Length: 450
Image 1 (cartoon, rainbow, N blue to C red):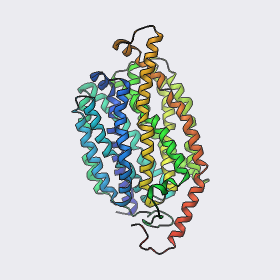
Image 2 (cartoon, rainbow, N blue to C red):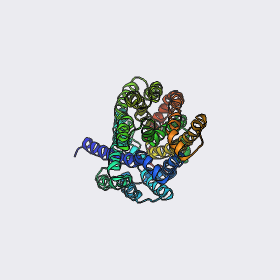
Image 3 (cartoon, one colour):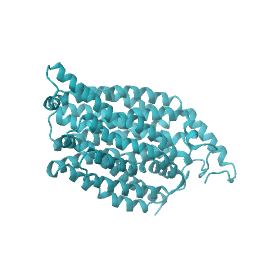
Image 4 (cartoon, rainbow, N blue to C red):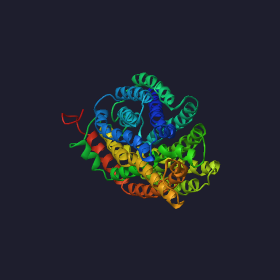
C-alpha cells in the first residue's frame, strides 16, 4: 500500500471514529425531551446532563493531549472508542438523573481521546497546503454523526423507547476500535517543509502553546462557538417538539437536516475556501471563518422568527445559518496546526478543547436551560397564571424560543474574535516557520524531545 493510500485509509478510519464520537454524544439531545418527561426534569437539569459530559471531557483531555504527543495515537484512539461505546450502551440502563449523569461522565472520558490524537495524526499525514481539506473530511464526522444520531435515535425512540437508542449506538464502536489498530502511525512532523521529527522547544509544553498570541484568540473563539453548538444540540429537538408541535420522530428528522446535514456543505466549502484563500494570504483561513460567522447571524434570526408551525421557514433559514457556522471547524482547526509545532499539536488541541468545553460547551446547555426556565416563568406571569406543572408545560416552548436568540447574538462576538485572530496569525506562522528552518539545520542531540 502506497503512502497516499495509507494516509487515505487512516483518514477514513479517523472519520468513522469521529462520526461515532458525535453520534453517541448527540443521543441525549435527540431523546432528551422523553427523558425529561419521564423523570420530570427542568430544562436546567436537562442542560446539566450535557454539562456532565463536557466538563469531564475537557478536564481529562489535557493529560490525554500530552499522551498523544508521546505515545501511539492509533492505540489511544482504539481504546477510547471502545470505552465510550460500551458506556453509551450502558447509559440505556439508567433509572434516574444521577445514574445518567455518571454514565455521561464516563462517555466524556472515552471521547476525550479522539480530538487530540486524531488532529495530531492528520497534521502528520497531510502537508499544510492540503491540511484544511483533510481536516474538513475528518470533521465531516461531526455533522454526519449528529444527523444520523437525530434521525436514527428519534425513529428508534418513537417505536421502542429512548433506552433502545443507547443500546443500538454501542455496537459500531467495536468495529471502529479494530480498524484503528490497522492504521499506520505516521512519524511526527513527516509532512512539514522542515521535518524536525519530535524535536520541541525548551520549556513547559503548556506554556509554550499559550505563548502563541493566536492561540488565545482561537481559545476564546472556541468557547463562544461551543456554547452555541452545544446549546443547539441540547435544545433543538425539544424546541421543535414544544414550539412547532412535532413528535420525537419528525423532530429528529428535522434536526438531522438542520443541525446535521447542513454541516456537510459548510465543512467542505470552508475547507476549500480556507486552502484557496490561504494560498494568497496567510491569514486567509481565519478571514473565511470570521466572515462565515457574520453570514450566519441574519439567517439564524430569521429562522427563529418563524411562527409556530412554520417548520419549512424555520428549516430554510436555519440550515443556511448553521451551514455557515460549520465553516468554523475547517478553518480554525487547521489554523491551530499552522501556528503550533508538530511535537506540541496534541497538547495544543487539549488546551484548546479544555477551554472550548469548560467555558463554552459546559455552560451552553445549562445557561440556556436556566434562561428557558426563567423566560417560561415570565411568560406564565405575563399571562396572569400561576406556576404549575401544567402551565410550565404550556409555556415551555415560548420560554425556550426566547432563550435560543442568544445563539445568533454570540455569533456576532465570534466574528469579532476570529477577526482578531486573523490579525496575529501571519506573524505566528512566520515565527514557527523560522524556528523549524533553524532547527532542521541542527544535529539531533540529547536535548531533542523524543
